[in-house]
Length: 554
Image 1 (spheres, rainbow, N blue to C red):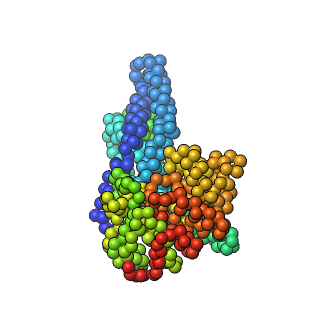
Image 2: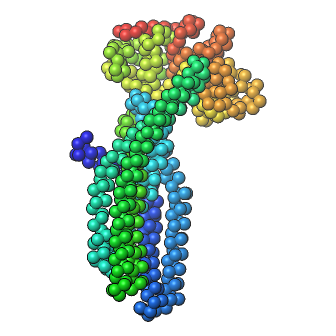
Image 3: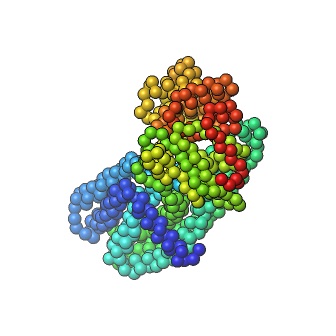
């Protein structure tokens, strides 16, 4: 990457950080103010200690009681300010982090589906957790702390300069060397941190995927290979962290050596000046304190730099997520009565595919119709569903919803007209009631009972807690058929006149399948039904059949 491109990237990251610091700026300002108060107390502390020592040695006149009271007041102020800082960090900080995570999470939910699919779920989780924490720490802690350190550095230097210009200049000579080292350090650390973050995301992805498919791993006896994969990734992460740590420690040791040399110079100069009677003991004490107050901030900067670099890497990763375009936003469009869907010359193919899945595809799903979609695996049935609910958009042609009075092009805004019943187990952790209310949060008790009846899920009423019975992730504790029927009931509760049923009877026995289809078709009269199926039994409930063949032209 060229220097210009890097500068542009940094500018973009800074702009992104500013936009996303909304809600965190108050905490950042508060932490900065507390830090500035602490610096002022430290400067006054140096002067007060010098004055007290000079009074005690007879060099100056004054009251030790008054000076001691001032020192005690400064100590109390520092204690209070640091307590307030810890409170802000513990209580306010979590609110800021939660707000940022929610904002990014909400954007992901509204992001373009195709673009979002390029990111593994584990990687997204890692970014929402680790990267968001790094960014909030940067905005609310690292940046204010860096500003405070810079103010402390400048204030200490000028106070030291007022006492000894020569010593101040000798100490400050070290800083340009530190800046040169820091520039090289930041560039290398940014790459190291990016590699570590990426490896951490891969580990997160393996863990999540393996736990999701634990039954398959056991059945295929892939325990050892999965463990081996995780071990290799963890070893890679260990090597990357080791390399980063070695580099960081080397740079840190170099800076420490420079500062130790500076402190030694100040100490020897002070001892020599004290012996010759050029300075008082109080002045020497002040010199050594100020040298420490100059060197300590610089040392702290070397400690903050890795965190800041890591946060810049986190910002890059979150910036990538924000770069994903959003789906079309606006007010939902709900057609009156029953809607139909019409495909006209639709062509669609996925990236990397030589041929489109659908080419010049035309078909009409009229209002109040019942259609069975049949086709071999890979023919495009799943793609057709995604086009219907506007998860993906046609590359050519158009899809429109109509009801005889009005028509609208298919988009995310027309998604409310659809009721989608996905294939397989799609339940979430919670109670049966929680899952049902996902279909319609305002559903009444009677409506939920009716939906369960239509879905042949009356077994729920025989559970110890009925609809308040707990189910674990992906319907744990239920058979596939039981979970599938609850998912069907959930979808029935959703308002919408077009029902898309994707292999909804795949886990049901023949008798239950027939009864559920009978109840479903009878209860949904006046709606448009679209069955995606391999089961011939479903076709008898449909008035039209759509057969899809691979790469067929329609």
